[in-house]
Image (cartoon, rainbow, N blue to C red; front, top):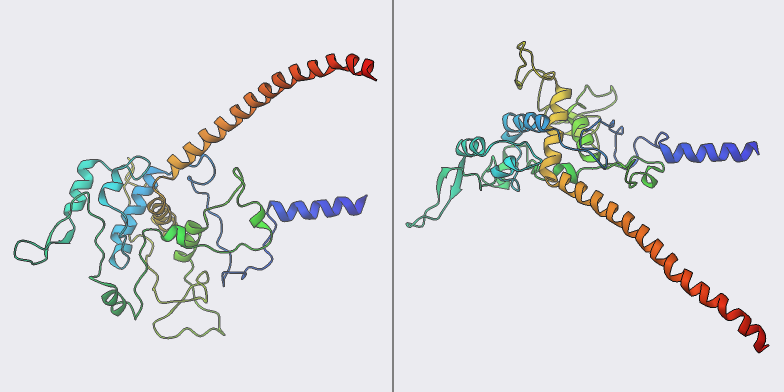
Length: 299
């Protein structure tokens, strides 16, 4: 009896969140810590203020190297996103120069951006981007939060897909961890010229230097003149990771709402089908019982 109890407890610990078998499994570094995201879970929603701060970090810091070719300026005003006004989006787009053309003379030209334009890349082409960044072009940020993931090891895969306790925030967790993962390398670890040590990056050597420092981005102030949230690398990482998650899946809240309605409909439909089945088979059962005396007479 005791052996069975211990075996059951051990299995439950594995299924409900025991430590991974190996911190290096499938990732090459420590497993990024889980952040308490507002958009996590079945009923999660994006925090509009956080998305606006995350866009500010992207615009002032990340956009110098990283493009976002699949996101249009007008997306910033759509429901469920940063919720900028149409006037703000129009003014923002006008601050960018967009390559257009050809004109009547067959020449390409630059013009102010429009809300329908996508964010222009910081470099004219991938070759120029690579030449300016040590031989490798920085990745586009449009879907980076969905493209980056890691293995948590153990038996987490058995629970990560479950609707109410599932886990699908590996991308933003990894981005936040990477931004905060720069540190001095161990004594026996050699970092080549042009590289930087990051404990969360696979292989630990990353070409990108620490992208941001405390106080680098000035956030909006409250009534007392204090930042609404701390102006720290940790907070910057959370805000930009949330914004990039929205950029990768801007209709996430609509998808979750639709999924909830579909599940509710299926539950109601199942109940109706159950009672219809009982009604139909109740009548058939009565007919079968009525035939039993006749069957006895036949034999």
